Length: 419
Image (tube, rainbow, N blue to C red; front, side):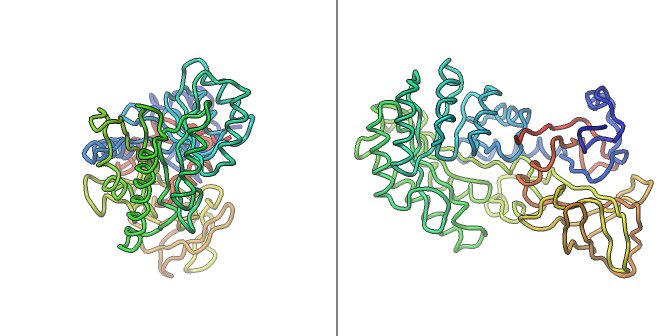
């Protein structure tokens, strides 16, 4: 039995390992299938690194998007400050992989997880930063770490939120109380401020951009208030961080002027984006909202695509394909038919007249013109929306050299770690 659903059914371990040398044609792989295009992925890495350099910001990409060690390491090699994670499990994976700097974009209030971090950072290995938005969270960290006696204080960023948003203190006054609690603890170190603007807006119109801009100004105000009150450690560096993949242009506009890596204005300050979806981009939500469409500075290319075989043509205007919710993402929009590969052929034929109308666990409903020549056995390529809920459906994702080639070839697998 082949343990990776991305591989041909009779593949041996040796055949999986030799993919980079064998480079089999994509048309020889079974469906359902999700692929990552190496050409697009490398272009996206370079585009984001160049954009951040021009904008004057650093990058701590969110690793939850892919949970793949080789991609994390390529992001670091491209200049990323470190990797962001969301859960204690993801944090443990980052520490196991010896990622040098890891930001947990969440409160860490589970005692066992706190003890784990204290133990696994005691040897001078990875630097870990966590967030806090309540005094209660600070109390838990203080009590557990006071018993664990870590060799260095745990770095904590104060998280600011907004009404109707996700986590984060709702007012500057509440956030300052949390900051004071961190500053008062000998086992914690106040390391900056953090926020997530993506929970406050979901479009790229002027109203949404204004909401994001206002939030980021409040984040700067919190940083200034903490500095004015003398709560930051004397002379210590601090971090200002915000920015998913939808509004990093606004983050750079507001926060980049505060970046001071040399400490010329009195304190070393770094500004970090946490964008993660850029590495593969998509043909849906992120393609529609990416800041590069607003401000330029390059172009991201969708590196992820879904492939499914037509298994039924039960009605003139309907095709059923063999991929569903367990294979393709659907939370930010249905897959979009893009191309057709006729049965037994490697030819690529545009297939934009079709639309997806519904998805089951293992089937997708494709509406098409009554006179469509689509037949059972044909393979459809789909554009996908939302990388994060694509990768977590696959233990391994097939890598093709270039999805836009006349006949793409599989050159490897990206194994994922989602627990």
